[in-house]
Image (cartoon, rainbow, N blue to C red):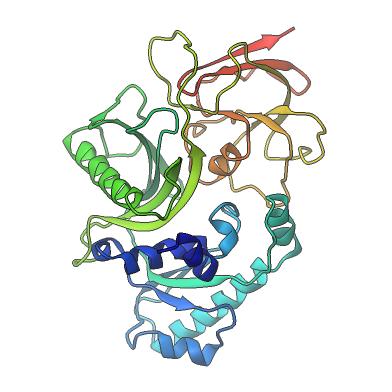
Length: 370
């Protein structure tokens, strides 16, 4: 089976679902999916959907370019249709699909995809799936240490607008408690957390065994946690797989008390000196002619009009700087080296300062250059 053929036909986000379905053995990890072609009209949409659509759904936008890019760029809205008549839910589907198509054809989406080096045609595919109300998250195998996994688990607390972002680091079969951050309540490090992490890694390895992702690369798998909502499905649900970074072992040692698992990319042993550009979001970074160290505050989804070309180092600031969820993931793939550490000492830096960044892929050093 040729993974690229699936990506070309169904897009990156949905290509993995169809690939795993056809390869077999993944049925318990895949939620039902109703596939909407780029030119499908409302009449044809009604024909592909089941009779009973009185439920809550998510519409996942997919395009061939979102396997290697377009992270957090295409819209994937929900349709809350529980207890609504069929015709009302159908109208919601049609309205949302048209909105998704309009959004995906905005000039800034074409520009962003071309910035990433990919020609874009605006023809999105859409997968309609039941909405999983449990936790969701993503996992990568650490690209500089095999059999170490970074799991970002998102928990929506009932009655709260803000979500908790837990980080579980699993080294082999054991949780690395020093590098894990458990914020949500009542979720805590313990037997249940360890078993959940192992289940997530189990599916990740199962996907790894297929040929969907180049074996030379770590990849990110997005998943959902099934809390008995779908009785015929596994506890962990597969959503998407996309390449992350090429595996590379640390070529030199940085003496520290522990591995930090917060740096991606490897510098020369003496490091690299870069000018600092500090932003709230991404203002003013598009036309910087030299390589620079970018220190944005990662709080909300970034506008697709933010298109920096020379990210020598990506060092986000903020309480969720450690997370690879969405915003950070996009820039880690584009930067030469990234430091994702909420405790990184970068508060004193301002635009125009110069910083020395040293990374061996497991540990890092930051020094102000005067």
